[in-house]
Length: 339
Image (cartoon, rainbow, N blue to C red):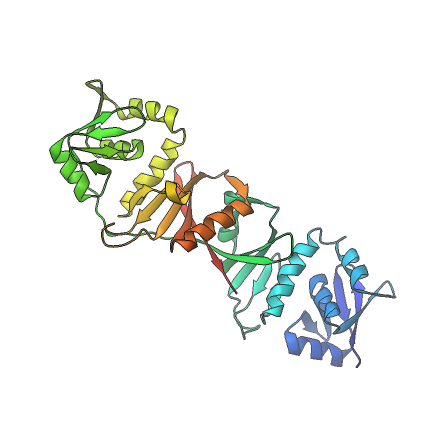
């Protein structure tokens, strides 16, 4: 069986034979066809692995190993990108290259509009929330992130800005909150009743316990905080709270924003996140979201992110990162998918 001959010039592969070029292009939509077929190095590598082409570099035939060694000179993370490209092709997708991979819906090809942009990333790369934010902003398509682990297996995530909206309304409060040390107590019967109706805090018979976060929010809506019989300003209270919970200011920004969105944040400690978030009454259903609040310079390992997303999925929740950049708040959802 004859195969097409690819002449490699710098970072491109060229098939000059018109018949063979047509055959390769029409069957799998590889390369760019214009009298001759221009292939990327990654496309050429895939076709070479599948014995669809022979490759010549500087007039000499190259095998798969030699070609991969050559390609690394032009694409430092060649093996990562190639594994993602190869996996998607093996799944039956048409994949084209730009700065990233452009993925078409199964069964579709150009001139149809692409459905996804795919980022190929090693599991050893750092997860940077600001980078994910920029990836989403820069793509016109839905964003898929393909993570290649050390054994060459692939895990895919859809990353998107997420809109949240609930059914719970805000209101103002009146009454007294007593600061202990790392939490607060409400003895005021009227305030206790309002908090109970709004599912804020936890009632222990004759009193209601509030977290520092909840106390700050309720105080911002009209209640007062006292310590040893003396009223504290919210500023003084936050100064106290920061000694116990250093990131309370950012968490409070997120908590307040979620309340404005008619949602109910409760502690997400049992799930390894800052909040579990309800979109309606907690008595009527489970919290559909886990939210982790981070600064725009937040970094983690992909193993940590994988664990968080998998845990959220196992308890039937969405994993959402609340990125706070100065006063701007963005919600970024990561969801594992199987293409």
